[in-house]
Length: 513
Ligand code: UN1
Image (cartoon, rainbow, N blue to C red; front, side, top):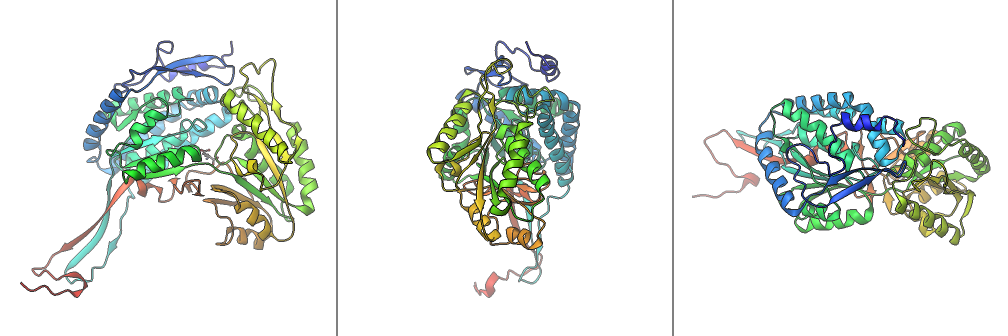
């Protein structure tokens, strides 16, 4: 059996009772059925995790609500101190957690470590932010009056996250929510439940060391039904959900029906525009990492290359050659560039996408296919594919969570490339490769890219936590992580104070008694 230090990592992360159903901390009320977590790396059963029944959920909500009453009164910089300690613990456990991410989800160990690094980065960001939850002061139109706004803690925040970033997406939400004085209930993907347990164990330890209730961080497990407990629960003012557009529409409607707030991070259909002034070497690195990194399962993965006809053949040939160097296999082995897809259903979706593409007239120039034989026994390993296609193909319009890269040709002006890039329902990430200032600025202008992220001379994936992360159109419009994304985790209050002995009315209204 393959080890690569997995057993040691599980022990270090406090994952116990793996055969009978592991759970975590004092507030994991898991009496439901067990979920089995299989590794896509070698197909073996890593462990079983207890799921949350409706009754368990009610208990979770009780401890979360109780914890909120206490946590919201702690000064924000002191909440920041707790998040600082959480970041320290993550540094200690970076290798072990990165390894578990790699083994349970299938991304390369390097990318697993990168994901934990994003968690550490957002903790650092949140610590500084805990002293900067500023509101404005305004000038009142009435004499002897002061007007200002303040941000208060919101309450219990529900987090629903996907398998592809099984730990980082939780941290982007929770680190900010915590310094804002909120408590969180997290439902990780049922495909990566052990990553959830590991994270909860780490934060539970920090909370315990600080004599704080574990209800500040709660974990629930299960499928979409467990998610529904939260989306329909009026006691949860904000639901942050990451996943497919299909899922996002269901969540958004359920939350909107009770006039709650939702923060949605849904699908992307990200493109890189390659203009005649592009640096080819940089383009290839950006495109290959963007397309095959995380086996094409990032919401920021590069799915389309929109290449000017003048260098189309050159880019195509260089790409095909670059793909020949890629090695696919066990992601814990650092010599491999690409690991498996998450499960065999994902492999089926990948195969169907290739079939649809060919049916629509697309031409595969790097074949793809599912890998068999030694080292590929899990059935989850596929070869990355490149196809010449047209933007209007139905399959190109969709986000297939797999390493399939579509080459699209444009001619004439950069405006034509921008039109192709924008002509999809998703609006997450986009990039242009060019050394031409005019092209770059047009791409970034109001009539340029319509995405939440637009990059020049870097690829579509690998966003840093300092910027607000998210996208427009069917990507859902939410923003997480940096900039002022914290505001959604708080409620804003406008206050007007009269320090005179008169009561003048606004807008000059006279009301004589
Ligand atoms: C995701 O795929 O859900 O920009 C998030 C990136 C990462 C985050 C991706 N920082 O690729």
